[in-house]
Image (cartoon, rainbow, N blue to C red):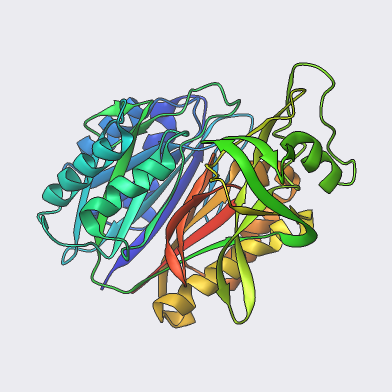
Length: 398
Protein backbone atom coordinates (compact mmCIF):
# COMPACT_ATOMS: atom_id res chain seq x y z
CA UNK A 1 0.00 0.00 0.00
CA UNK A 2 1.22 3.49 -0.84
CA UNK A 3 1.52 5.90 2.06
CA UNK A 4 1.85 9.65 1.72
CA UNK A 5 2.50 12.52 4.07
CA UNK A 6 3.14 16.25 3.96
CA UNK A 7 4.88 18.80 6.14
CA UNK A 8 5.13 22.59 6.15
CA UNK A 9 7.33 25.17 7.88
CA UNK A 10 7.84 28.93 7.97
CA UNK A 11 11.32 30.14 8.96
CA UNK A 12 13.93 32.64 7.83
CA UNK A 13 16.55 29.89 8.15
CA UNK A 14 16.40 27.23 5.42
CA UNK A 15 18.08 24.71 7.72
CA UNK A 16 15.51 25.35 10.42
CA UNK A 17 12.61 25.03 7.97
CA UNK A 18 13.76 21.76 6.43
CA UNK A 19 14.67 20.31 9.84
CA UNK A 20 11.15 21.12 11.09
CA UNK A 21 9.63 19.35 8.07
CA UNK A 22 11.88 16.30 8.45
CA UNK A 23 11.00 16.02 12.14
CA UNK A 24 7.31 16.24 11.29
CA UNK A 25 7.56 13.43 8.74
CA UNK A 26 9.65 11.25 11.08
CA UNK A 27 7.82 11.80 14.34
CA UNK A 28 4.24 12.65 13.44
CA UNK A 29 3.93 10.62 10.26
CA UNK A 30 6.60 7.95 10.83
CA UNK A 31 7.20 7.62 7.09
CA UNK A 32 10.23 6.36 5.15
CA UNK A 33 9.79 7.94 1.72
CA UNK A 34 10.95 6.61 -1.62
CA UNK A 35 10.10 9.93 -3.30
CA UNK A 36 10.14 13.46 -1.91
CA UNK A 37 8.83 16.64 -3.49
CA UNK A 38 9.60 20.08 -2.08
CA UNK A 39 7.89 23.34 -3.02
CA UNK A 40 9.97 26.18 -1.63
CA UNK A 41 9.87 29.97 -1.43
CA UNK A 42 12.74 31.26 -3.60
CA UNK A 43 14.27 32.98 -0.57
CA UNK A 44 15.26 29.53 0.69
CA UNK A 45 18.37 27.70 -0.54
CA UNK A 46 17.61 24.50 -2.46
CA UNK A 47 21.08 23.07 -1.88
CA UNK A 48 20.56 23.27 1.88
CA UNK A 49 17.19 21.53 1.49
CA UNK A 50 18.75 18.81 -0.67
CA UNK A 51 21.63 18.14 1.73
CA UNK A 52 19.31 17.74 4.69
CA UNK A 53 16.96 15.39 2.83
CA UNK A 54 19.84 13.35 1.40
CA UNK A 55 21.36 12.96 4.86
CA UNK A 56 18.10 11.71 6.37
CA UNK A 57 16.85 9.61 3.43
CA UNK A 58 19.83 8.82 1.18
CA UNK A 59 17.86 6.45 -1.06
CA UNK A 60 14.87 8.70 -1.73
CA UNK A 61 14.47 10.38 -5.10
CA UNK A 62 14.15 14.17 -4.79
CA UNK A 63 12.21 16.70 -6.87
CA UNK A 64 12.75 20.22 -5.53
CA UNK A 65 11.47 23.47 -7.03
CA UNK A 66 10.88 27.05 -6.02
CA UNK A 67 7.26 28.22 -5.86
CA UNK A 68 5.94 31.79 -5.89
CA UNK A 69 5.50 33.11 -2.34
CA UNK A 70 5.63 29.63 -0.80
CA UNK A 71 3.22 26.72 -0.80
CA UNK A 72 0.57 25.04 1.31
CA UNK A 73 -0.34 21.61 2.62
CA UNK A 74 -3.68 20.36 3.87
CA UNK A 75 -2.67 21.48 7.37
CA UNK A 76 -0.88 24.80 6.88
CA UNK A 77 -0.52 27.82 4.63
CA UNK A 78 3.25 28.33 4.27
CA UNK A 79 3.03 31.83 2.79
CA UNK A 80 4.07 34.29 5.43
CA UNK A 81 6.51 37.14 5.84
CA UNK A 82 8.95 34.31 6.60
CA UNK A 83 9.68 32.07 3.60
CA UNK A 84 7.72 28.84 3.44
CA UNK A 85 8.85 25.30 2.69
CA UNK A 86 6.58 22.30 2.10
CA UNK A 87 7.41 18.62 1.62
CA UNK A 88 5.32 15.83 0.09
CA UNK A 89 6.51 12.28 0.75
CA UNK A 90 5.56 9.03 -0.99
CA UNK A 91 6.42 5.70 0.66
CA UNK A 92 5.96 3.05 -2.01
CA UNK A 93 8.67 0.38 -1.76
CA UNK A 94 7.19 -1.71 -4.56
CA UNK A 95 6.98 1.26 -6.94
CA UNK A 96 9.77 2.82 -8.98
CA UNK A 97 10.75 6.49 -9.07
CA UNK A 98 13.50 8.27 -10.95
CA UNK A 99 14.64 11.87 -11.28
CA UNK A 100 17.06 13.88 -13.38
CA UNK A 101 18.05 17.54 -13.41
CA UNK A 102 20.07 19.62 -15.84
CA UNK A 103 20.35 22.72 -17.98
CA UNK A 104 18.17 23.08 -21.08
CA UNK A 105 20.66 25.09 -23.12
CA UNK A 106 20.04 26.18 -26.70
CA UNK A 107 18.08 23.04 -27.68
CA UNK A 108 15.43 22.53 -24.99
CA UNK A 109 13.74 19.67 -26.84
CA UNK A 110 16.91 17.56 -27.09
CA UNK A 111 17.89 18.39 -23.52
CA UNK A 112 14.46 17.37 -22.23
CA UNK A 113 14.67 14.08 -24.13
CA UNK A 114 18.10 13.36 -22.63
CA UNK A 115 16.85 14.16 -19.11
CA UNK A 116 13.83 11.91 -19.67
CA UNK A 117 16.11 9.01 -20.55
CA UNK A 118 18.30 9.77 -17.52
CA UNK A 119 15.29 9.79 -15.18
CA UNK A 120 14.05 6.48 -16.60
CA UNK A 121 17.49 4.96 -15.98
CA UNK A 122 17.38 6.35 -12.44
CA UNK A 123 14.08 4.52 -11.95
CA UNK A 124 15.60 1.36 -13.48
CA UNK A 125 12.76 1.38 -16.02
CA UNK A 126 14.59 2.48 -19.18
CA UNK A 127 12.59 1.79 -22.34
CA UNK A 128 9.23 1.93 -20.56
CA UNK A 129 6.59 4.64 -20.35
CA UNK A 130 5.86 5.80 -16.80
CA UNK A 131 2.43 6.16 -15.26
CA UNK A 132 3.11 9.88 -14.88
CA UNK A 133 5.82 12.40 -15.73
CA UNK A 134 6.23 15.29 -13.29
CA UNK A 135 8.17 18.31 -14.60
CA UNK A 136 9.42 21.60 -13.18
CA UNK A 137 11.23 23.74 -15.74
CA UNK A 138 12.44 27.30 -16.08
CA UNK A 139 9.82 29.51 -17.75
CA UNK A 140 10.21 30.09 -21.47
CA UNK A 141 10.55 26.84 -23.42
CA UNK A 142 7.85 24.61 -21.97
CA UNK A 143 6.37 23.61 -25.34
CA UNK A 144 9.78 22.33 -26.49
CA UNK A 145 10.32 20.56 -23.18
CA UNK A 146 7.01 18.70 -23.50
CA UNK A 147 7.89 17.72 -27.07
CA UNK A 148 11.26 16.36 -25.90
CA UNK A 149 9.66 14.29 -23.15
CA UNK A 150 7.11 12.93 -25.62
CA UNK A 151 9.90 11.98 -28.03
CA UNK A 152 10.91 9.38 -25.42
CA UNK A 153 7.72 8.29 -23.60
CA UNK A 154 5.12 8.93 -26.29
CA UNK A 155 2.23 11.34 -26.51
CA UNK A 156 -0.28 9.46 -24.35
CA UNK A 157 1.76 9.49 -21.11
CA UNK A 158 0.38 12.24 -18.83
CA UNK A 159 2.87 15.06 -18.28
CA UNK A 160 1.97 17.27 -15.34
CA UNK A 161 3.82 20.04 -13.59
CA UNK A 162 4.49 23.71 -13.45
CA UNK A 163 7.22 26.14 -14.37
CA UNK A 164 9.42 27.06 -11.42
CA UNK A 165 8.70 30.48 -9.95
CA UNK A 166 10.12 33.17 -7.71
CA UNK A 167 8.44 36.05 -5.87
CA UNK A 168 9.13 38.95 -8.24
CA UNK A 169 9.73 37.48 -11.73
CA UNK A 170 13.41 38.26 -11.21
CA UNK A 171 14.83 34.95 -12.43
CA UNK A 172 15.48 33.65 -8.92
CA UNK A 173 13.71 30.33 -9.58
CA UNK A 174 15.67 27.11 -9.01
CA UNK A 175 15.17 23.37 -9.50
CA UNK A 176 17.08 20.39 -8.11
CA UNK A 177 17.09 16.60 -7.83
CA UNK A 178 19.49 16.71 -4.90
CA UNK A 179 22.55 16.19 -7.09
CA UNK A 180 22.29 19.15 -9.49
CA UNK A 181 20.69 22.56 -8.95
CA UNK A 182 19.85 24.73 -11.98
CA UNK A 183 18.17 28.01 -12.82
CA UNK A 184 17.71 27.77 -16.60
CA UNK A 185 16.98 24.08 -16.73
CA UNK A 186 14.55 21.54 -15.37
CA UNK A 187 14.03 18.72 -12.91
CA UNK A 188 12.06 15.75 -14.15
CA UNK A 189 10.47 12.78 -12.36
CA UNK A 190 9.34 9.43 -13.75
CA UNK A 191 6.68 7.88 -11.53
CA UNK A 192 5.79 4.17 -11.61
CA UNK A 193 3.63 3.93 -8.46
CA UNK A 194 1.87 0.77 -7.32
CA UNK A 195 -1.44 2.59 -6.90
CA UNK A 196 -3.67 4.29 -9.44
CA UNK A 197 -3.09 7.88 -10.58
CA UNK A 198 -5.53 10.43 -11.98
CA UNK A 199 -4.62 13.78 -13.52
CA UNK A 200 -6.73 16.72 -14.72
CA UNK A 201 -5.91 20.10 -16.26
CA UNK A 202 -8.50 22.90 -16.11
CA UNK A 203 -9.02 26.62 -16.44
CA UNK A 204 -11.33 28.50 -14.11
CA UNK A 205 -12.42 30.98 -16.79
CA UNK A 206 -15.44 31.39 -19.08
CA UNK A 207 -15.45 32.43 -22.76
CA UNK A 208 -16.89 35.73 -23.95
CA UNK A 209 -18.34 36.40 -27.39
CA UNK A 210 -15.14 38.10 -28.57
CA UNK A 211 -12.97 35.96 -30.84
CA UNK A 212 -10.64 36.16 -33.83
CA UNK A 213 -7.77 34.48 -35.68
CA UNK A 214 -4.03 34.92 -35.23
CA UNK A 215 -2.82 36.37 -38.53
CA UNK A 216 0.75 37.22 -37.49
CA UNK A 217 2.85 35.96 -34.61
CA UNK A 218 6.33 34.81 -33.74
CA UNK A 219 6.60 32.33 -30.88
CA UNK A 220 5.15 34.06 -27.84
CA UNK A 221 4.87 37.47 -29.48
CA UNK A 222 1.54 38.26 -31.10
CA UNK A 223 1.40 40.99 -33.75
CA UNK A 224 -2.01 40.73 -35.41
CA UNK A 225 -5.50 39.38 -34.79
CA UNK A 226 -7.69 39.34 -37.90
CA UNK A 227 -5.12 41.58 -39.62
CA UNK A 228 -5.32 44.28 -36.94
CA UNK A 229 -2.80 45.25 -34.22
CA UNK A 230 -3.19 42.61 -31.52
CA UNK A 231 -2.82 44.92 -28.50
CA UNK A 232 -5.59 47.20 -29.74
CA UNK A 233 -7.91 44.28 -30.50
CA UNK A 234 -7.24 42.85 -27.05
CA UNK A 235 -7.98 46.19 -25.36
CA UNK A 236 -11.29 46.38 -27.25
CA UNK A 237 -12.18 42.82 -26.31
CA UNK A 238 -11.73 43.60 -22.60
CA UNK A 239 -14.16 46.50 -22.90
CA UNK A 240 -11.50 48.95 -21.80
CA UNK A 241 -10.52 47.02 -18.66
CA UNK A 242 -7.03 46.80 -20.20
CA UNK A 243 -5.63 49.69 -22.26
CA UNK A 244 -2.92 49.61 -24.90
CA UNK A 245 -0.11 52.10 -24.18
CA UNK A 246 0.37 55.18 -26.37
CA UNK A 247 4.15 54.78 -26.28
CA UNK A 248 6.71 52.16 -25.35
CA UNK A 249 5.86 48.79 -23.80
CA UNK A 250 3.76 48.25 -20.69
CA UNK A 251 3.88 45.19 -18.43
CA UNK A 252 0.27 44.12 -17.83
CA UNK A 253 0.86 40.78 -16.13
CA UNK A 254 -1.02 41.60 -12.94
CA UNK A 255 -3.91 43.48 -14.53
CA UNK A 256 -4.58 40.76 -17.13
CA UNK A 257 -4.86 37.80 -14.75
CA UNK A 258 -8.67 37.85 -15.08
CA UNK A 259 -8.51 38.54 -18.83
CA UNK A 260 -6.55 35.72 -20.55
CA UNK A 261 -6.82 34.64 -24.15
CA UNK A 262 -8.09 31.14 -24.76
CA UNK A 263 -7.76 28.48 -27.45
CA UNK A 264 -9.99 25.43 -27.72
CA UNK A 265 -8.06 22.44 -26.36
CA UNK A 266 -10.80 19.83 -26.65
CA UNK A 267 -14.53 19.29 -26.37
CA UNK A 268 -16.11 17.55 -23.40
CA UNK A 269 -19.80 16.79 -23.18
CA UNK A 270 -20.47 19.13 -26.09
CA UNK A 271 -18.69 22.05 -24.41
CA UNK A 272 -15.36 23.50 -25.48
CA UNK A 273 -12.42 23.12 -23.09
CA UNK A 274 -9.92 25.97 -23.29
CA UNK A 275 -6.20 26.32 -22.73
CA UNK A 276 -5.15 29.82 -21.71
CA UNK A 277 -2.41 32.29 -22.60
CA UNK A 278 -1.57 35.06 -20.13
CA UNK A 279 -0.76 38.47 -21.70
CA UNK A 280 2.52 39.81 -20.32
CA UNK A 281 3.16 43.07 -22.20
CA UNK A 282 1.31 45.39 -24.57
CA UNK A 283 3.24 47.63 -26.96
CA UNK A 284 2.39 50.94 -28.58
CA UNK A 285 3.31 49.27 -31.90
CA UNK A 286 0.27 47.01 -31.44
CA UNK A 287 2.18 43.88 -30.48
CA UNK A 288 1.77 41.90 -27.28
CA UNK A 289 3.69 39.12 -25.57
CA UNK A 290 2.27 36.13 -23.73
CA UNK A 291 3.53 33.31 -21.51
CA UNK A 292 2.72 30.60 -24.06
CA UNK A 293 3.31 30.06 -27.75
CA UNK A 294 0.75 30.74 -30.48
CA UNK A 295 0.57 29.77 -34.14
CA UNK A 296 -0.84 31.60 -37.13
CA UNK A 297 -4.37 30.41 -37.75
CA UNK A 298 -5.15 29.78 -34.07
CA UNK A 299 -8.59 30.98 -33.04
CA UNK A 300 -8.39 33.16 -29.93
CA UNK A 301 -11.28 33.65 -27.55
CA UNK A 302 -11.37 36.39 -24.95
CA UNK A 303 -11.83 34.70 -21.58
CA UNK A 304 -13.12 36.22 -18.35
CA UNK A 305 -12.36 35.14 -14.82
CA UNK A 306 -13.70 35.95 -11.37
CA UNK A 307 -12.12 35.61 -7.96
CA UNK A 308 -14.91 33.29 -6.82
CA UNK A 309 -14.36 30.92 -9.73
CA UNK A 310 -10.62 30.75 -9.05
CA UNK A 311 -11.21 29.98 -5.38
CA UNK A 312 -13.59 27.14 -6.22
CA UNK A 313 -11.64 25.60 -9.12
CA UNK A 314 -8.92 23.64 -7.22
CA UNK A 315 -11.51 21.41 -5.56
CA UNK A 316 -13.33 20.88 -8.86
CA UNK A 317 -10.18 19.92 -10.74
CA UNK A 318 -9.17 17.55 -7.93
CA UNK A 319 -12.54 15.81 -8.14
CA UNK A 320 -12.07 15.56 -11.90
CA UNK A 321 -8.61 14.01 -11.46
CA UNK A 322 -10.05 11.32 -9.19
CA UNK A 323 -12.73 10.50 -11.79
CA UNK A 324 -10.12 10.28 -14.55
CA UNK A 325 -8.07 7.85 -12.46
CA UNK A 326 -11.06 5.78 -11.41
CA UNK A 327 -10.19 6.50 -7.78
CA UNK A 328 -12.95 6.32 -5.18
CA UNK A 329 -13.16 9.26 -2.81
CA UNK A 330 -12.25 7.16 0.22
CA UNK A 331 -9.27 5.60 -1.56
CA UNK A 332 -7.38 8.86 -2.20
CA UNK A 333 -3.94 8.66 -0.61
CA UNK A 334 -2.53 12.06 -1.60
CA UNK A 335 -2.80 14.96 -3.98
CA UNK A 336 -0.50 17.45 -5.74
CA UNK A 337 -2.00 20.75 -6.88
CA UNK A 338 -0.49 23.06 -9.52
CA UNK A 339 -2.02 26.52 -9.15
CA UNK A 340 -0.88 29.35 -11.43
CA UNK A 341 0.99 32.06 -9.54
CA UNK A 342 -1.01 34.71 -11.40
CA UNK A 343 -4.24 33.14 -10.13
CA UNK A 344 -2.79 32.79 -6.64
CA UNK A 345 -1.76 36.45 -6.47
CA UNK A 346 -5.23 37.48 -7.64
CA UNK A 347 -6.92 35.55 -4.82
CA UNK A 348 -4.05 35.66 -2.32
CA UNK A 349 -6.19 36.91 0.55
CA UNK A 350 -8.39 33.82 0.15
CA UNK A 351 -5.71 31.16 -0.30
CA UNK A 352 -6.35 29.72 3.14
CA UNK A 353 -9.97 29.26 2.08
CA UNK A 354 -8.70 27.20 -0.89
CA UNK A 355 -6.60 25.10 1.47
CA UNK A 356 -9.46 24.59 3.90
CA UNK A 357 -11.90 23.56 1.15
CA UNK A 358 -9.50 20.85 0.00
CA UNK A 359 -8.82 19.68 3.56
CA UNK A 360 -12.53 19.47 4.35
CA UNK A 361 -13.34 17.62 1.12
CA UNK A 362 -10.38 15.24 1.58
CA UNK A 363 -10.08 14.75 5.34
CA UNK A 364 -6.73 13.35 6.35
CA UNK A 365 -5.37 13.35 2.78
CA UNK A 366 -1.86 14.83 2.37
CA UNK A 367 -1.72 17.73 -0.11
CA UNK A 368 1.01 19.95 -1.53
CA UNK A 369 0.58 23.01 -3.76
CA UNK A 370 2.92 24.58 -6.31
CA UNK A 371 2.43 28.21 -7.41
CA UNK A 372 3.91 28.31 -10.88
CA UNK A 373 4.76 30.59 -13.83
CA UNK A 374 3.23 28.18 -16.35
CA UNK A 375 1.26 24.96 -16.07
CA UNK A 376 1.36 21.61 -17.82
CA UNK A 377 -1.19 18.84 -17.92
CA UNK A 378 -3.37 16.53 -20.02
CA UNK A 379 -6.95 16.92 -21.14
CA UNK A 380 -9.31 14.02 -21.61
CA UNK A 381 -9.37 14.49 -25.37
CA UNK A 382 -5.82 15.50 -26.29
CA UNK A 383 -2.20 15.15 -25.30
CA UNK A 384 -0.39 17.06 -22.57
CA UNK A 385 -0.06 20.79 -23.16
CA UNK A 386 1.46 23.94 -21.70
CA UNK A 387 -0.79 26.81 -20.68
CA UNK A 388 -1.10 29.79 -18.35
CA UNK A 389 -3.50 30.66 -15.53
CA UNK A 390 -4.37 26.96 -15.41
CA UNK A 391 -4.83 24.49 -12.57
CA UNK A 392 -3.59 20.87 -12.57
CA UNK A 393 -4.25 18.17 -10.03
CA UNK A 394 -2.70 14.74 -9.56
CA UNK A 395 -4.50 12.29 -7.28
CA UNK A 396 -2.94 9.05 -6.01
CA UNK A 397 -4.81 5.99 -4.73
CA UNK A 398 -3.74 3.89 -1.78
